[in-house]
View 1 (tube, rainbow, N blue to C red):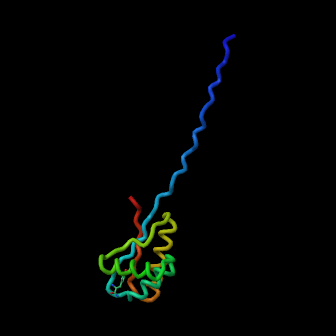
View 2 (view 1 turned 45 degrees about the vertical axis):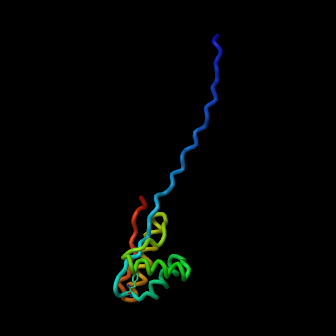
Length: 101
Ligand code: TYC
């Protein structure tokens, strides 16, 4: 009887897919007070006063600024909550989301 040769198989680890990330983008407008934008950035995105001020000024001068990057659900929830905070005060403040390349 021919002998059976057992070859150990190397276990292939199933690859853990990294979730796609989404940018939250702050859009400039002519009406929302600067200080209110800073307050929303600190409250919703946990930015420091300094970080929030830089992000606000960047959006103010360039039109838009990336605030932070999250998984899709978190990005959309935060963008909606931050936009709604402006809406509640009658401001056209807008946060959008966009997938990372
Ligand atoms: N441009 C606004 C002003 O001059 C301030 C502002 C900055 C508004 C950034 C929105 O995303 C924004 N009062």
